[in-house]
Length: 191
Image 1 (spheres, rainbow, N blue to C red):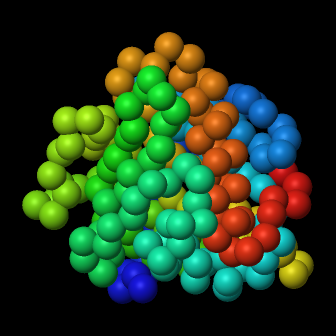
Image 2 (image 1 turned 180 degrees about the vertical axis):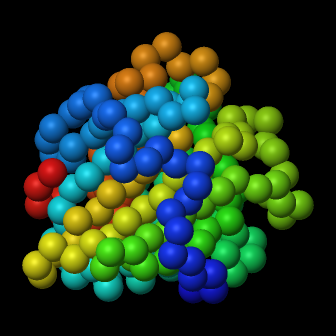
Image 3 (image 1 turned 90 degrees about the horizontal axis):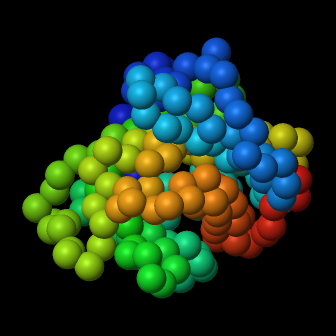
């Protein structure tokens, strides 16, 4: 389980709430993108059929749920708050990975898991995988009645010269929310 620092401030490197977002997809999850400090960011939002405490606990134990996920092939816990995550990309595109330190906080009733990239000796670069050393973002799990409104915000440069980055961004947002819903034993109910 994550032994995370609890802070009240939002991750400083992410787009502010006042950012202007462009809609990429409306269903089954809402996916929007923006540019902040000359870097692309996207967010995917949807409601899953699980209580917010269960969704946040499932995410905190992400390494225990990798077998239930389609878009993630490996999650290795390197330290209590550091994960090495490998994302599955379809052939002929190389898989992507990142190493990140996670912090957990509560903001406006939501459980927030923010991450920043780090280097770690326990996660050497694999030449067959594209390392994303810039990837940062956050997951938010907010109560929505008996369900959870999940927001996944990530730096959306997929690396490696992919010609249709917006297609990758749509799939990344959908796969991320689908995977967390599946790990919680449920589905996406609505955007």
